[in-house]
Length: 375
Image (cartoon, rainbow, N blue to C red; front, side, top):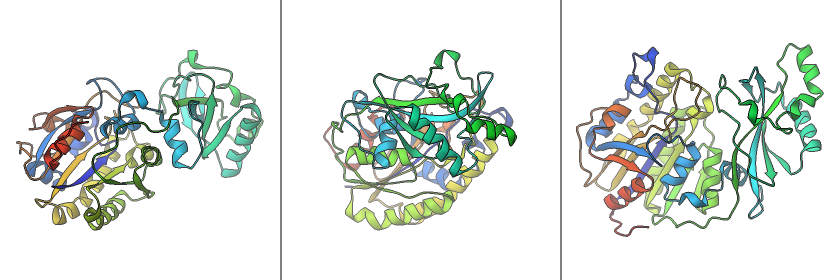
């Protein structure tokens, strides 16, 4: 039975960009290592739901790992579990982020000048909001009595609907620290935006048939793995090439003890470079350089290699996510090779894997690895 080496590069898929000659960053980037994997294996497309339906990165990964949508507890739960926050069964939680909004447009996210200033703001918030927990600088967990609709457009420059404004959303306008910020020539913090809402329940989904080890630089994904009861390590990344090389090195040493290693990075999402297509090209090339190690040591008949992304992240239009599928490579013993000579969204569409939806990607990996039982 083959071992699995799965790598999910968050945020590498995009729409065609005018400034790149109506091509995507993946099409423009020089990716000789990923392209070689594409030539050795089969390519296709993946989407967790219906093609065209936008989803968030956490939901895409949630479904990719075979979880039924009805047990999805919301990103707020994953962020909290990752940090060791104890949640109450059946309660509703959401995330709140302080921002500056002008004329209905999101201008700046988490605009704090210092840790001390953010601490003052959180103290003010705690006095006026029940059941609020600080998860990170400018990221708060709030328990609610009912579901809270997402009001966070996800990217600066996007419009915030006036209909989404509640008393809690406008609470930062009353913070006295804004007077000091304005005197310094800084923008005030005037809104709380909400996202990631869900009702928390303990994990009740199907257990993974494979014994996988998860390695990630993503806090929400680390929380998801802890919630699912999986073995996982969180390792922050500041240089993505070095981080991936370190991840591949650890994977090579650990494959003997597991059925597979699953690596996920949300580096591009955290860089906040969504509207900077050329910067994304540079990051993709840095990622590709690390895959030289995979080609040198993991292209064997004993290892099944899978590379994909989480969501399509459009550079234009001020949208946090798109409903277009992402490219996927599967390379290993028995995989039907296709004609793809490059790992990108367009050529993957004509590959031998076709379009995989929902848990079909995981089932396809099961088939190539030799698992003959479905969920």
